[in-house]
Image 1 (spheres, rainbow, N blue to C red):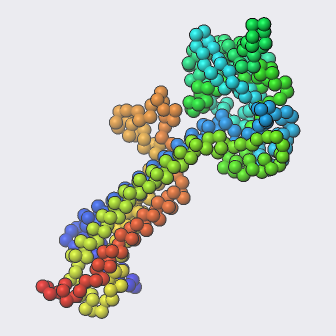
Image 2 (image 1 turned 30 degrees about the vertical axis):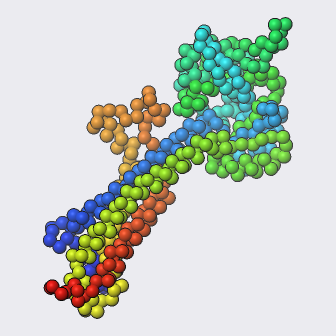
Image 3 (image 1 turned 60 degrees about the vertical axis):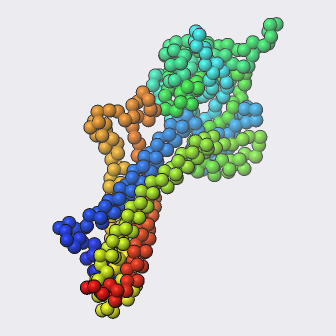
Length: 414
């Protein structure tokens, strides 16, 4: 048998003069909490999806960890890679050569980052091969001086596969007329689109041996790129490798090279959580007014219960039960609807687009043309807990007011 406080609290939740299960104002409070919880879950899921998508696109070109040498030169990269692989969290690695240059095609001139890679190693470290729009990574062959351009860079230069571009590098030749930049003609063998403007507009790939000849590096490379078992362990692996190598090397990871970007995303997510939490707070404030009205309406009932021996704390529990039922119901409805919407967002958004007759995320404008969603159950549990706590806190003041009702005053005109 349930305590009478719970039974009366449940009974008070029903509308007294209505056929509805819950009174209009209780429904309004419950709906506000449900909408706030649902909005929080969906928005945070979308932000998680964007963060995951952008991280994947960045890491399709960047590496989890990079080991570089002093003055951007690293000798015996095979030995360095073998030492790095002694760490059980390192899967594989690939050498690279970095250089600055200018690409020209007719009157079009663009500055670019030149990266020399070994295709058979590079495809094990990065997922750039999956972003190739024209050609493939294996089309880069030593001695053939082929080049793969970012999609935006190729568009700005006005070139396509098979066209010729001229590369100028600052490693100049000394002539009687002075220092002249080195000039080499390359053939475009591929175009990639990583979905990040930084790479699509400013990165060009060539074979590592061609880069070594062009930049006069001999057998040296700029560094080694590593792929890890778990990318989020990169800072710890970086620290371990720096201690293990004990040489004139610098070791960095993706969280350092793109720290400002990911920190901005994290701050934006935190601020969005706090802003949307105000919706739940407003709904909880509405719950306060609902219970205050209920206490005013039930003063005679409270007085009768007090005369029958009910203690003030028992009166408090009655209205805490009433308010908590509204808060719990709203939270459960919000969690269920938010989870369902977040899991099916990729289906819901096209339906909305068809209903409105417009494309919300046109591919020619946005790199990410679909609304990604990644449901994080930790976020769901935090949102649900915060909603329940706010709902519970909202019941305390009205319940305390109910416990302070004077039976004599309440029954004076009854």
